[in-house]
Length: 290
Image 1 (cartoon, rainbow, N blue to C red):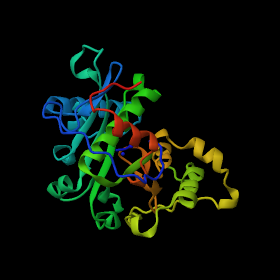
Image 2 (cartoon, one colour):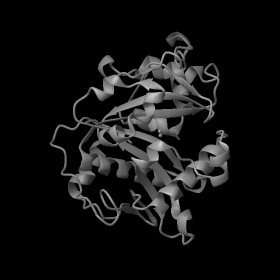
Image 3 (cartoon, rainbow, N blue to C red):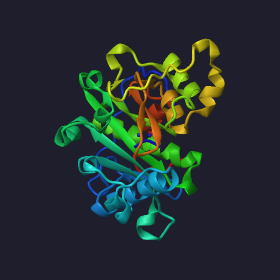
Image 4 (cartoon, helix red, strand yellow):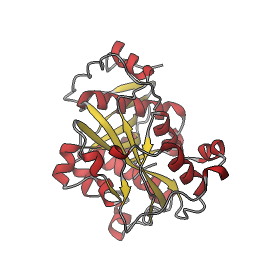
């Protein structure tokens, strides 16, 4: 999600059979769109390339504050990286080694969180309502794309990878912390108020910011909101979750290290778009996309 964190209609037909795991590239194999491919990292070197990209985007571009060791290594890394799957967008037309990794998303399933002792989001939100849900759950985070690749095609390919992963692991709920730039909630008042008044999660799925970190999202009354303008101002990633039918939790959280204001996002994966459903019903995982 950028997050440190796709289009929708309810599916009436049975879910398409997940792509078969690929032992060479990990998970669902690799999906291609021209020179770009999306797949899971399969080596420590590829995870390090994702961490280097995260450092470039979060710290160099967005002004996050790096600890000395992290700054020296120029890698954004934490304890969750060791249990997560790391989705990569790679440019097969680029021959500069690790710089071929031009996008990444960190994926943590219930089993992986058990090994880590918790989900990353639990540092900001009470996610007990999500954990209590039966079936597969997936935390999305640390999403970023290199500045030269932030067009529609790269993000569409990333979401296709997420969809394949969801099918493969039978994920029923996706969630995570999505970020708005800056740490002044009043400056983000329109966006936060719009999310609260229009996209609040139902109680049985609603994360709530931890009491010591809770920032009220209701900065403006509904009558004072220009909903269309507030929606335009939301970061593309959050708008993507909303198009997926996503909800937000109760309360924002200021992330001083990353220079952002976070909101919790929850997506039920039965709200997969007809487009993605039809694609995985008729295509093989390795076929290219238009």
